[in-house]
Image (cartoon, rainbow, N blue to C red; front, side):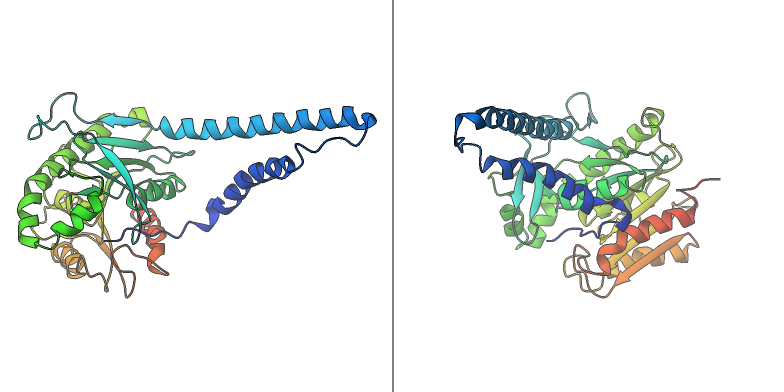
Length: 344
C-alpha cells in the first residue's frame, strides 16, 4: 500500500524556506572547522577570543531555534473526541505508537489508536474553510504523514484549517504493524471479518469529529457551513459513507474521497441534500480499483447532484508522479469553483 504524493504549490516558497533553515546551520558548522585552531602569537590572542565568542553565540542561537521548532511541533493542539471510555473499546489500554515504514511508504504511520482524536493544523491566513482529514491504512495503521501532515500543510498554504482525524484501529501485537497488516491481507475474508467492527467504530468517531468541529467553529475562526471531509483509501470509505449516510447534525458541506473504496457501504442512496463531491483516483490502482471512484461519481450524477471526477492513467494507490501528484491543486480549484474559497 502506498499513500498520497503531493507536488507542492509553486507559490509556497517551500524551497526557499528549507534553504534558509539549512543556511543557518551550514554557516556555524563551517566556522567550527577552525574552532580549536590556536593563535600564532600573543597579538592575535584578543582576535582569537573575540571570534570564538561570536561563534559560541551563533551556535547557541541555532540550537535555540531548533529547540523552538521542536517545541512548536510538540505543542500541536490535540483534541480528544471522548472524555471517558469509548463505547466498544472500553477495555482497550494498549499504548498508541508511531513507527517509520520504509518502502513503499518512507514515512511515519500511527498504530494502536484507542482514543480517537483530532490534530489541529491552522494556516497563517485563515479563509474560513476547514477539512477533516481521514488517512487510510486498512484499519491497522494510519498514514499520518503522507495522507496526514503533508496534506494538511499543503492545505494550510491555501488558507484551509485542517483537523487530522485519528480513529480507532485493530490492535498490533508487535512493533511492526505494517508487517502485520500485509500478513493479514493474505486472507481477505478473515481480514474483512476483523475490520468490520473497527469500520463501524471509525464511522462513529467521524460523526463525533464533525460535530466537534462545527460546534467549535468560532474558536478556530472557521465557517460552520464550509466544513468538509477528505479521506484516502480506507479513510476514503469513511468520507464516502458520510456523504451517503449523514444526519442533519453531521452533514459535511463537501466531501473528497481520494482513491477511495465504497464496497461494503450499507446504504448507497443519494440524499436530496447530498454534499458536492471531489473524487480523484488512478486507473492503475491495484489496491482500490478505479471502479469504486467511477461508481461513486455515477451515483451522484444519476441523482443529479454535483460531482467532479479526476482519473489519472498512472499514479497507483497514492497518486504518485506527474500529473497525478497535482491532484491537490485541482481540489483547490474545485473548492474555488464551488464558491467555498470565496463565498458571496
